[in-house]
Amino acid sequence: MASFQVSSGKGSQQSGWSTGLLDCCSDIETCCCGFWCPCVLFGRNAEMLDRGTSSCCAQGTLVYLLDIFTYLGCCYTCTYRTKLRKQYGLDEDPCGDCLVHCFCGKCAVCQEYRELKNRGFNMTIRWKGNVEKQTRGAMTAPPLAAAMRS
Figure 1 (tube, rainbow, N blue to C red):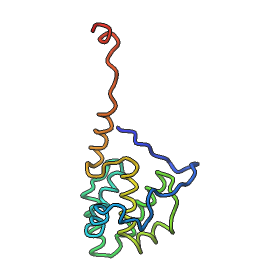
Figure 2: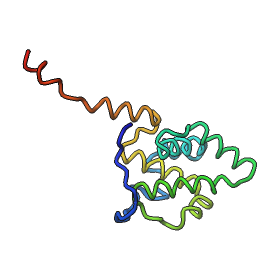
Figure 3: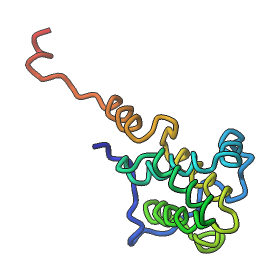
Figure 4: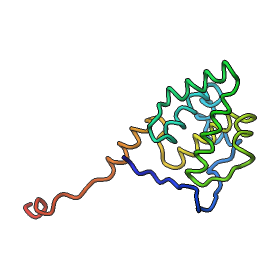
């Protein structure tokens, strides 16, 4: 399993987000996807935060159905904002996670997506692709005997 740099948030100093809640125009592609298909961005965020134990498709579909039938998708999505904040020691800014998701849900999902991108995740290749990419970059040295024969 890959070891992406993750802070437990416990005992670590709180820090700021890499982009602001309303900085959607800093990444137009994410902004457009977040505006028209926020469930796609949320699904990708959830898969990364769950370290591949959940499917981006299943998470996105769940939020989509919650929003359509109950209008309470924000109650579920805010739990992942909390998870992201705790993993990286981020401030609860500008207000509580549930309030951010209830009143600025699309902006919140976009900010969380940008945060994960800015922390080195390639959000389009999913968790497994990120793990493979990271392990491919870590080459091991050849055995000493083989190196001495050449």
